[in-house]
Image (cartoon, rainbow, N blue to C red; front, side, top):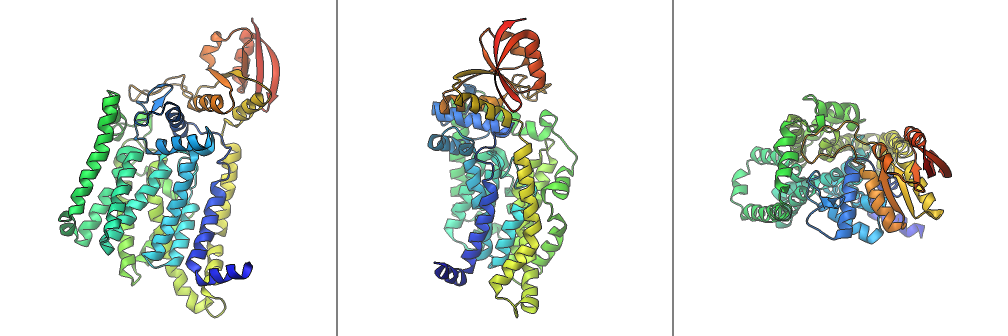
Length: 510
């Protein structure tokens, strides 16, 4: 069995290295995704949207707590995928995160095969994939490791760039329609954010002197018509089904978010550059400019044009989001694959210069490339896995709740009241649909999930609702301060304790 495998690896080195890259992607990617509780803010809100869609089967209008959602106004492509996964896998964390897990695998694969088949550089593909995986801003919650919009948006923007570049290089119709499909999917994933890659592509067309070819291409107008039909049709249908939806979109995504810092989430003009430097493109940021220069100086003109497109896409994306007043760290996520490919091309240039002089006499090229890859990426990859384990083990405050509720269900509980901490301490209202003090989306998701999966009925109460408790209610509380407030109002009988959480029976008011 081993010998045929060795022969296959020797005859197909590009495929063999892809298998290695795939393993290095999947192993850390799935760590914790099966059991790590749903995260607060976007993931939990989207998870509730998906859970309610799976239950009410309304595939047009997303809902939150039974009402049309006019706070999260993004189009529902990700939510559609999550709802389908819920119907296949149940109301689980994996169902919420599986679309992003697949998107990450496809993103890394696309980087690799674009480098191999279009730019004709196997080392660049391997290096670019590993640079992306070990970048602090990509392999994190809110991008590659949670059920948020940005991990899927990153894929569509990379696919959009690849399809556009291939079409201008090879003039194959399938590449144009790939670009069109990626653009439509990007907008159906995150609304207007899906359009932010277009300015860089437009500047690239002008630079290459291909504007005349493009504006006389009938496929351009067919794509515009298809875009208007699908995207315009979605927004019109949603507005028809939920009057006021388009107004909410304008407040949340269009002028409101761009001109006013949403929920006071602003920052200086160099907000994203600082994040790239200090955290999100560490440890590769120091090599970015030298890599761009090395890649640009290569004699292969296709690679040089690719570097130009990557730089224009990244620069225009950063310029647009930096000019907006609302700033969130993950808005820059779509530039990571482009930056990773630039670094990958620079590292590949160094490898190709060094191999024939220093390595060829001792090792075959594939073996030498593996050793070189290990030398470059061993420490960054190790650091990424350490950070990942730390994040999974220590950074989710809802572990105690989910563990206790599962234990209570296993012990026979069928109805519990969960005393939940405040998520929003002092609400700042930016739009009429912003949540108030009672907002608890993580618990709202598990209220739906545990009812469906465990037959466990959860009632949620916060510190302002303790007076609604009754004698004989069975209460779960994990927060020490809330436990003290509860004990000050009622006589309690302990039933079960798991970690920081207790199940208590309300016996009488004090």
